[in-house]
Picture: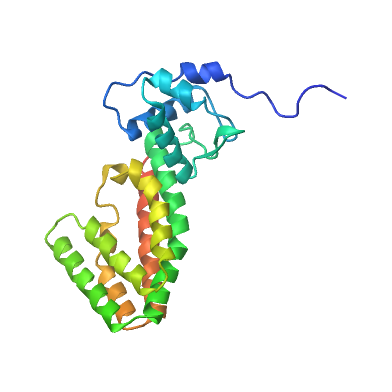
Length: 251
């Protein structure tokens, strides 16, 4: 029987560390992750491979270990890596850019957004269904008030993102189950901490805002079937928009 291990040797850890580059002072968490993305490609790391230890990354980049840890936790929340004390930080998603012509960091951003979106979709659909089923006069007034604020900002050409968040928060509150708001926030937090404006487009999903009027009205009148159908359309439209961005590079 051969003494050779079944698994092929993992990439040279020293090579991974050498692929890291010094960062200038004042770098952001996004900058740290961009450097790690380039390191992963340069060292040809794949799914199942370990990244260098936090302390090695911090020393090479000349940043604090806390900043490296925060960045890797954000990646963990986005499903890009897994982390535990014994195995260290292990790649759970492909980071290479050689499959398509999309820039590596943009490809990673799009794939991360799609992962969070696929988890958020059923939660949001069920939330509007329950909100409509359990709607009270108080919550109906609150939802319609939030809708009015959202549409006023949207019609004026302003940044509607916070108003959109507040409308969905009002819908989540109407479900009577605080876990909806908590879970959606947790899902989105890891992505939003890094990618405040996906693909450099702060208004990503803007084409769904007109549908929010029908959504809010369906919830407020207790029409759970229609509310769920509209929410599904909204989520599908966002996914389609992300995939179109990806397709523009896939030549």
